[in-house]
Length: 242
Image (tube, rainbow, N blue to C red; front, side, top):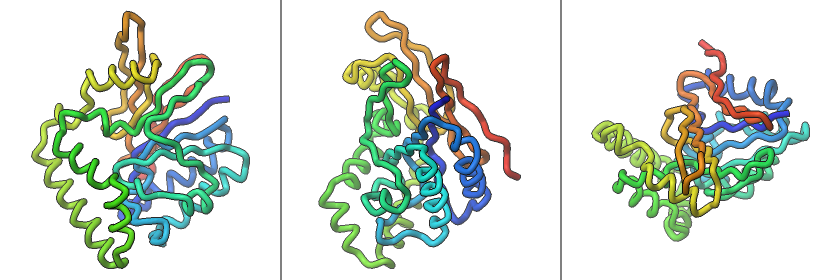
């Protein structure tokens, strides 16, 4: 048996091929997993549990089929879908987990994060994140009409894309000191996260002990997962769908 980790699918009506690949993944290899963890940004945008895009319904149904088959699915909020709530869980059978969360992964305490809080050099993003994660802001946003929520989300997306185009690759990557601090605080020597779209395996040292950091891949061009067994963890790119 193995445990699977994915993130940054950014499911969107504009990329139906990726949604199709996700559905095949849920109906195929995920059925053989001991558990599936989705570490943020499952959807490109989530406007609230009461406003689910029709194009997302198939993905919710496939997730429900997987959980009904007996495979537990744990979902962490990302920077695009942090408004997922109790209705999402009822619709899919998934369980929301905190960011960060520590799990026992085959005997090794492992820290799970989306990864955006590790990008501390991107101060503008961190300020924006604090704003949108504020419960008062979220309550005000969810009180808006459908049209207002769509317009606001579109504005934030355009602003984010423009800002990203002007930032250096280094600023948008994780800060090594932040990584070490997070792992020290959690008391672990293994970290799994997404967000940066840079799938990799990094070896480091924490308090004189060898440590590991696994970065999950995105699903923009093809699927990607981290497969962990009692023996090892390895990043796997799924076959392209085009």
